[in-house]
Image (cartoon, rainbow, N blue to C red; front, side, top):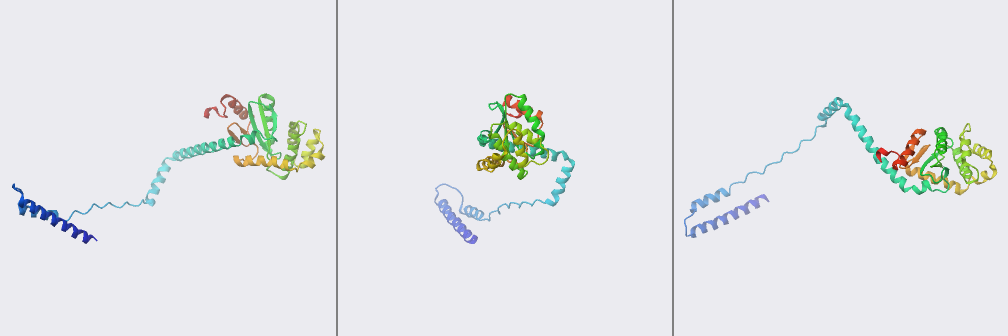
Length: 285
């Protein structure tokens, strides 16, 4: 292929040379002689310089650079700490965004479920949600604080959601708890009574607590397996799954989901911030 190209170029040069010779021979004015033209053509047919070769890139020698990186990190250990903090900050921000989107999408399910247990002011300007299990020791620890907040803050609404995850006894107690909330008695009395009961909470413990506040245990036993009771618990499970909640207690307030027990002071601060800036943390609002 290259040979054919060279032949073609040579032929073109010869024809061009012939044309130049003829032009020079017939020009009326003096110019280059025929010998000078032939010399020019000969120089034009000289081989062109070879194209500059691009040097190949040398492969990175990881075996050589690895120790260099290691020595640098050992000499600057704070760098890893800063990287870890930056990564944690970024992950928390991403998690916060996902949580906020989920809370917005689930607003009706969280706050307007017909089987919500509501304590305090039903029209309060701030709502605190607690997802709990009657067999949860940490839930037992926060009962007094939550009730105290209800008593001290006339504009606070507390929503309790039955979230039985620890045992079959928890599920049975939750079923009875939903029925108690639908009755004419004060659910708060049942709630505090059951959480003050010693030992594991099960069907019998829940029925006993209900009878102590004036309810007949027989209808409760008959109705506790009704489909509508199961549906109420399933709706809470769906909320938990969407929010990534897997433990109790879990609190929801404003734009924040708080896993685990939290002090009364921390809850109060978040409630105050909600009123002040519409978020649990005014510094980041």
